[in-house]
Length: 70
Ligand code: SF4
Image 1 (cartoon, protein in one colour):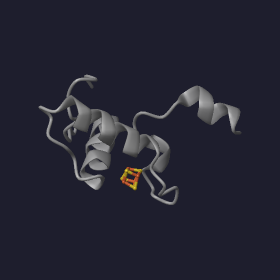
Image 2 (cartoon, protein in one colour):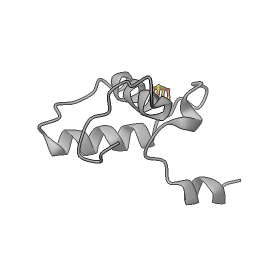
Image 3 (cartoon, helix red, strand yellow):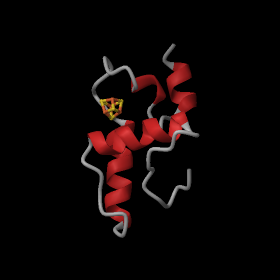
């Protein structure tokens, strides 16, 4: 997945499809507006729905930070 594009569902990429669902969950954004892309990424990263089945697999997590909490 490119950092400069909005992810789309792809049967060949389960993680890419999860990312697309997360973007859909937060309403997506206009891909032509970089500030909107940055904001949506931040919202997904800070997703408050820990009970969502996709939560552990959502994109833009800081893996090192997550590991230090365990
Ligand atoms: S992990 Fe968060 S952003 Fe992704 S689908 Fe679930 S609730 Fe939505």
